[in-house]
Image (tube, rainbow, N blue to C red; front, side, top):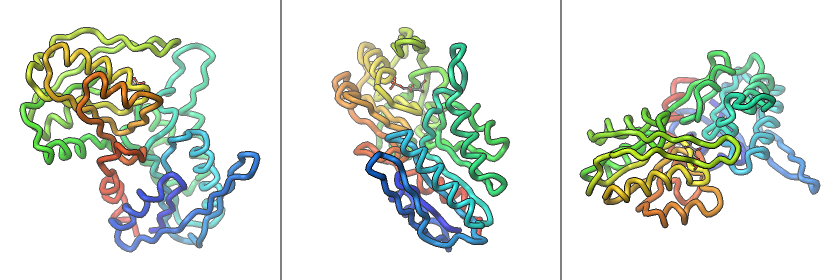
Length: 296
Ligand code: R5P
């Protein structure tokens, strides 16, 4: 199998290649023209090979997506046997439906473009903790979402966090908290959150969680502005929680979110390498390798 890590996944690509037998990396030459336009060249031959493209799409979403589109266009003209694509963080996944009339369905635009560029060569698309699994349907049976939550469970097990409680900061994140709780053999619950569709302002309903003196892990798919986590941290602190760990597969951590999360009372932020930053403490490489290890 040929692995082609895009400009945003060079380290992850190497890690994955080390875990997939008989795999070989082909590099990508990426340049930006003086006016900001992107240039991509695949640096090797992929004829008759199964190709795995890895490209995460943050930051900056639009640049990363353009790089992915250019890679797919180039590869599909080089006669590979098949193309699989791992998109660790799938940008625009929160615009998975038209919340208001006239809105663009961004996730569909991205999915349709990827599908069109890879054409009949498309074998699999893999995403991680995608915000909405509705998006997988745009790939007509070829897409699969993998959860990184078990990796967090093992991270906390190794950390030996005791007297622990898992919390989903909104109802849709409940299965995420449950996955971690199963590994740590602890209780879990969820909060109810309402987001104003115009201002983005988050309101979280107060809920009695019985977390006095407990160490709490809050688990979500994305931390963006940190608003969701901060609301949950404040509620937990007001109910006497002890140490609070916030974990999210995709720790985008926009603006002052990091310092605001710590100011609110979090002990630690834990993310994965779907977004490479100082909080990428857990690697998804083994989960990618598991998915592709039997492909020649
Ligand atoms: C939305 O429902 C997601 O699951 C996250 O909770 C959300 O994207 C986090 O965004 P923020 O950090 O801006 O509150």
